Image (tube, rainbow, N blue to C red; front, top):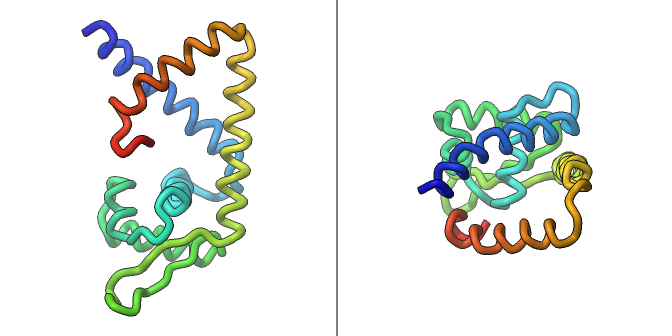
Length: 142
């Protein structure tokens, strides 16, 4: 019970810190929902607008507007599928891939810096704990 409570207490502020670091590396004018749309397309190439809407927690029309903005910015490619003209498959463009990769590199560097006070045994403990938790807490393994 104490472990579950600690996870529930710690994960939200950790996620805020991760999002803040990602936003710091995002291009000017790219909102958090739009950036999250890029991350979705990177994790699920060929995902649909409906799946993106579920990921963002918004309506399909709202997700469709986000897709249109990302396509106009040259960061996302939206392809109508031949067998289902109503479904649009989403893919990052090379520029979209670069934006996401740059943000992930920046965020990784920020957190590496935060972890520098830990010695090697402590880092190994953290990695071991994460390895135990991942299959239990991340559907599909991440």
